[in-house]
Image (cartoon, rainbow, N blue to C red; front, side, top):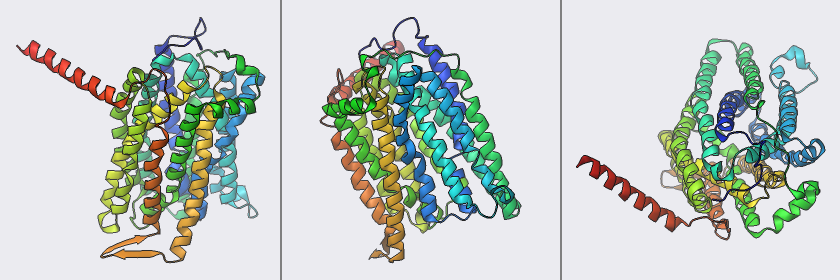
Length: 460
C-alpha cells in the first residue's frame, strides 16, 4: 500500500506514540461507553416502563442522529482545528448526557415530565453532538498515522476496545442483576445512576491521553469548498459510490433486526443481562484474533477482498437465530461466534473508505460512510420494531412440524438475505494497489510452506 503526503511533515508525531495514546483513549472510553449505552440503557428504559417501540427508539437513536456529523466539516472549516472540534464537542456531549440518569429521581423530573421522553431527548442531543466529535476525531487520526499503517493501527485500537468489553459489561451486568434482586424496585434504579455517572467520568478521562497529540492542519485544496460540493464529489466517484451503496445496504439489513434480537433474547429465550454480556464476550473473543489478522492483511494486500469475504461470513450468523428456540436457546452462541468476523468488516470497510477519499479533507466521506449508514440502520431498526409489533399483534405464525416460524423468524430471514447480498456491491470497487483474494490465498500458502521449511531446517 502506498504512502501519501497527507499529514506528513514536522507536525506528525511518532506513530508508536500516537498508537499508545489512542489505545489508552479507546480502552478508557469503551469502559465509559459500555456503562452508558447498550444493555444498561435499554434495561434502564424497561425499568422506567418502556414498551417495545420505546426500546426500539432508544436502540436506534445513536445511529439515527449521527447524520448531524455533517456539521463537523463546517466546524473544522471555521476553527481550522480538528482536535479542538473533537475536544469541545466531546465535552458538551458528556454534559448533556448527564440528564439521563437524573430521570431515575421522581423529585427531579416532577409529575409533568415523562422520564422516557426526557431520556430520548438527552440521548438524541448527546449522540448528535458526539457524532461531530467522532468525525473530527477519525479525520484527525487518519492524518496522524501513515496510510501504510492504518490496518495495524486501527486493529490495535479495536483490540483495546474488545479487551475492555470482555470485562466491564459482563461484570456490570451481573452486578446489576444481583442488585435488582436484593433491593426494592425504586432503589434498584440507583444501580443505573451509579453506572451512568461512572461511565460519564470515564468518558471524560479518556480524553486525557490525546491532549498531548498535536492538531494536524488540513492539507487539501478542497478544504475551502462547501460541504455539499464535497458530497457531490464523493458520490461521483464510482468506487466510493459502490462502497457507500454496500455500506447502506448492509446497514438496512443489520438494523432491521435490532429490536427483534433484543426482544427475542429477553422475551422468548429469557436471557438475563449477565448472560447477554457473556454472549457478547464470545463474539469479542473471536474479534481479537480476527482484528490482528485483518490489520495485517489490510496493510499488506488491501481491503476489498477482506471486506467481501468478511461480510459473507458475518451474514451466516442469522441461520443460528432461526434455529434458536426456548428449548434450544444455546444456538445463539453460534451466531455471536460468527459475528466475530465483523471485526474484519469494520477494519476493512473504514480503511477502504479512507483510501478512496481525499487525504486530510475527508470528513464529508466519513459522514456519508458512517453517519448516513447509521441513519439507515436507525430508520431500519425502528421500522423493524414496528413490523415486529404488527406481526405479533396479528398472530403471524407458520408451523413446520414442531417448528414455529413467527414474526421474529421472518425478520431474521429477511435480514439474512439482505446481509448476504450486501457483499456483491463490493465487487465493482477498484482499490488502488490491492491484491485479489486468489493472490492472498496463494501468498499465505507460500508463507506457510516457507515457515514449515524453516522449522524443519532448525529441527534437523
